[in-house]
Image (cartoon, rainbow, N blue to C red; front, side, top):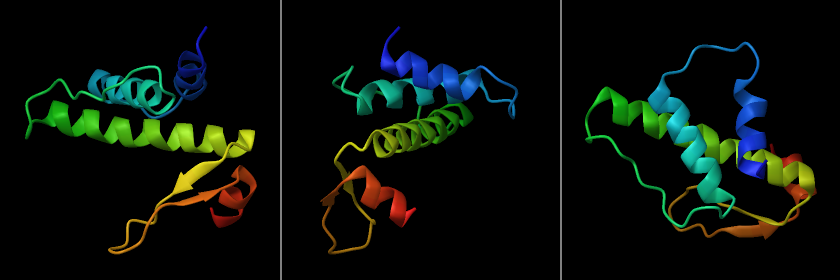
Length: 100
């Protein structure tokens, strides 16, 4: 079983709020992308539809799952606060956990 499959199953193989198939597809695609298992993150639904919105929301959760996975492993990661003019920082997983 791949790391992406393990992370996905850790999130969805227990009772939690229901999520659509599109949302789950976005989670899975994002996890695979951020772990380097795929080279592209392609959203398969027409923009402006509920399916696309669900997929994008799922992809955000997938990215969060990988960030947390890397942080707890102690992997060096990039942190970007999203503010205009700021640049990504490289830090240890321990430093990332302190900032959460």
